[in-house]
Image (cartoon, rainbow, N blue to C red; front, side):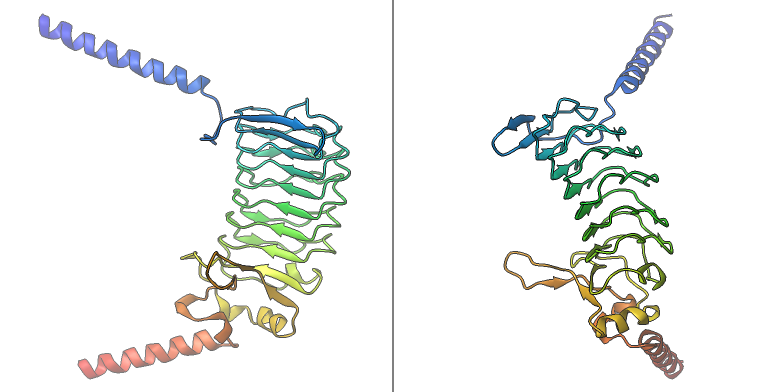
Length: 296
């Protein structure tokens, strides 16, 4: 009897622990970003700097002063940006919403930001953007979407950003760039696509972009992905004409590293000519086959 009582008590205890875990999980704050920094909540009227960073807020604040020019909402728990939430910030030139679990941006979310020049939405959970998201951002020059979960660039995805000159899409999951993905960007000068799931680029989506265009396709520290450089002869031709330039990153004491494609089989982009990789791989196969026959 004592043994059965002990077993029943243990089962009840385990069941109680399970219930506590489930209840805590259901009420747990939906914040994916756990900051180590302390909350910074301030507004400097002279400079126009508004900061509400690392404060675990779950919604875009509606009490941002209308005189704010640079707004930091970094490191919070914001999941969506409602329509017209920034409608009173007509003087704001820079909006930084990095390091939040933002997954939804409603159409018209940035309406009212008439003077906005730079928008940073990096390190969020964004997968796609609905039509009308960029409404009212006709003066925007820089858009940062690095470190999100975007898997495909659809036609007209950036429509309306007629002044945009810099677009950062590094470290997403992009594997598809559709025709017309960059339509409506007559002033784009810099496009960063490093650390995605792309293997090659077709010329179609880039046809209407202005030249010269600065591209970033691989960062120096990347081990992968590798590009099918042999199928991107069009890009080589554009480079030789001076129409394509390469974005470079300069580290402290090291020379600048150009973010050119890292080609498969260890070939260098600067060595690639039409058929180079295929021909060299064929030569390698012939050499290997000949050596195998000698051994046998």
